[in-house]
Length: 236
Image (cartoon, rainbow, N blue to C red):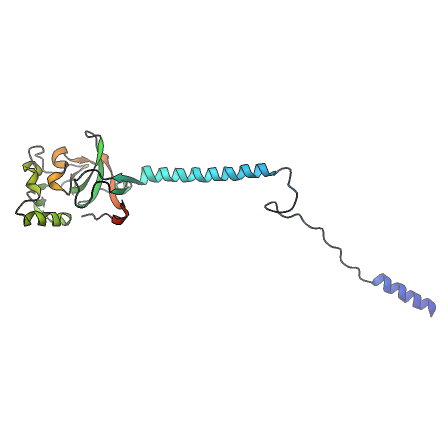
């Protein structure tokens, strides 16, 4: 019995479950851990990498700005009274440079274009497109023989009539079209006819001739300054 008892005690001691060993702790991740720095990624190299990422992001942003600025949109500052009362000197516009890569200008649209002889850009409104026959006499615009309403001049014409005047002819007979400067009344292919909204005080196609499509910068779409006048440009 004593021998059997000792064997049972020995068996019990041998089958006793041992506590699980504590697993070895893994070092924390490299980004913000207490693990020792790896010789291959010292703090200086991490800083260089962060600087490189910032430089790359800024370079991409600069490229996007250049693409937008030179190929899609451009700012333009109105200088002069030729488009009053719809645009005034000092107003800043966003010009869509891509739209006329897709389609041709339409009547009534406000465009910005280069004038090589003047060495600067003009802002005017498209009056005639290729193939149109144009006659502008006093305050009446005829396109292809039909009287054409110009809503953007409505208030100016009404104010002139109230004073017993003709809005357009205040500047003289050269304000009509055709005139002594240009006797061709049909808009040629690849060109537009463009007038300023301030007809008595605008140097436009009545003096400089038809505008070549190649000289058109784009369509004025947004007034963004002053902020009190921020709005989309009304075309036609």
